[in-house]
Length: 515
Image: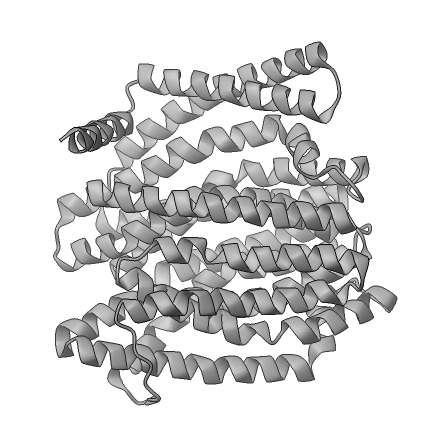
């Protein structure tokens, strides 16, 4: 498991750097446009190509990696490279087709993603989307190259590919406030293209060579097509939920889409940093152990992956709930982003934080099922969760407004995770559930105490130090540090097993450095 830990650590560090820059991008957008017509139109137009192809791209990445190893084992490295190029070229054609359809039916597409838009904001979003829809081509190609790099055990480059993209977008947003809002839209398109081009030299260095080869009748392409149906529905849950949230938010007060976006970015930062890092590294290992029928090591990997996520995410979700307002205020409240925007975004963040651990565990559990070649269970459970989210959205938005949209997403995610755990028990029997429950309870108890201490600490410090950005930052970071120390001490006192694993790993690394 030291290899998992090492690769996960590398990916987490890479993700931290990339995500910090991503946050800077959101801060610049919030400061420049706040929660306004321009920010709503831009966010919607930028998300449309992502939502369209992320479903397909994530699905491809899920089935492509194990299929590559199958081809490599059956026919060798040359055939595996030929297979990758076959997929690459098919994806190019598919993306061009999707981009063309998007250009022809832009208005209809925008109305699906933002049903409440009309008049000036509708026209603005349509014009923005006609530019950003072209980025589907680069998004698709980027997914293939990312998968190839991960196959070759390069997790760092896929972890930092958003850095050049975000630098370009940040620059374009700043320029757009001085000259023309359309600059940030063209900048987003260019940034997406660079995201793909940035990875290409590293893939070539690892052995990738382009071949103009297409064969849709290839036996492995047929296998992908058979697997892709259930996976694509399972992966689509997040995207459809986001689509529904945005669509209903467009019917609420101006800036609702922006508030959901900013809160979702904060929530997504945690998921990408910890959960995605764990899932990306553990997935090929789970697939390998499953193919070898090494059940003991498989269960061990499942337990450690889930418990690591639990220990990391639960305290962060509690912290985000008790400190949502000062976090949003410190990060975003400047320029056009005023106190109203802070209030809207912080309450949405609180509601999302309730289901933060569920969002993460759903991704990891999905990887567990895919590794045992079960694509139907995540699909069924995901469909149930999606249906429940839509129903809850429609009901809760009437009574809670924008808060109801985020809360319904959290509730449906929690139910989905519980269903996945139940299904996993039926599928393989014992998977270490006693260890998972034990660690989860200890984490919840520790996080609750941490939350109380953090909340009281922040209130005391903020009253002592008073207002002002610097004083607010000191109050916030000091209370977070105090809360983190309390949580760590409690986890150690409660003798959580994963703490010993991390401690042993650190000791081994120290010994290696010393020698």
